[in-house]
Image 1 (spheres, rainbow, N blue to C red):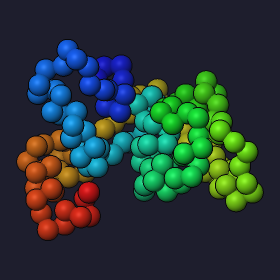
Image 2 (cartoon, rainbow, N blue to C red):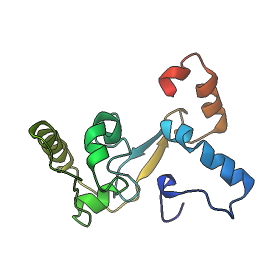
Image 3 (cartoon, rainbow, N blue to C red):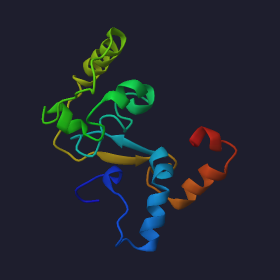
Length: 145
């Protein structure tokens, strides 16, 4: 993916059968993937684990559902290119939670280096089919999925 991240890739009619099958298990891949954020271009604000141990879409499902910019990158939001807006007015509790998130995200300094993708299921932090298979077939599968 030279310009986009794995999240923006979708199935096309011209895809090879192998690529089509790989896209089917994209969610499995994403479970073992972490991002060391640098410039924030390939890190999605809501859907990647970058600010907290879990992605914001998981920890804050109501805010995520109401948000109008679900796939925006950290870089685009922090630079102001994309404004975080919600489909409706937020009650006090949700507004307070959003302000907490924004306060935690604001001090994050982006640098002029590409985000680094780390594979958490291998010691060398590089993706392998074997480590994915082992994670899916181990007794701890329910911790992984």
